[in-house]
Structures are given as structure tokens and as C-alpha cells.
Length: 60
Image (cartoon, rainbow, N blue to C red):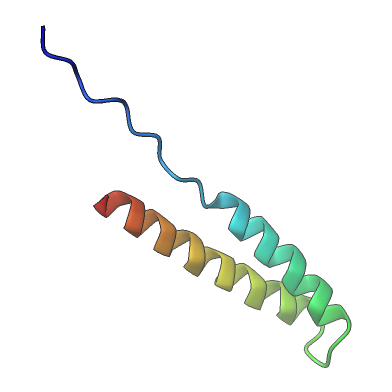
């Protein structure tokens, strides 16, 4: 019998979205940016990193 290849487990990047939003809001709270702008910048950075991980994992 031929052995089948082991199932691939995808890499999760969703935690980066949440972490980016939380860190962005915290950094924005103590800077000139403000918490809302920091939250949005952190969220967009987390989405970008998560998208990059997804694209790299998909190519693998």
C-alpha cells in the first residue's frame, strides 16, 4: 500500500490581527495619534501581516 502524505496544517495568522489592534490602541493612547487612529493603524498592520502569512502558507 502506498502511504499518503501527512495532512498539512495551515499556519494561523488571526492572532496577529487581534494583537495589532490591541497594541495599536495602547500605543495610540500614549502618543499624539490617539487611541482610535492607533487602533486602526495596528489593525491594518495586523491584517497585512496575516495576509502575508496566508500567502506564504498557500504557496507552501
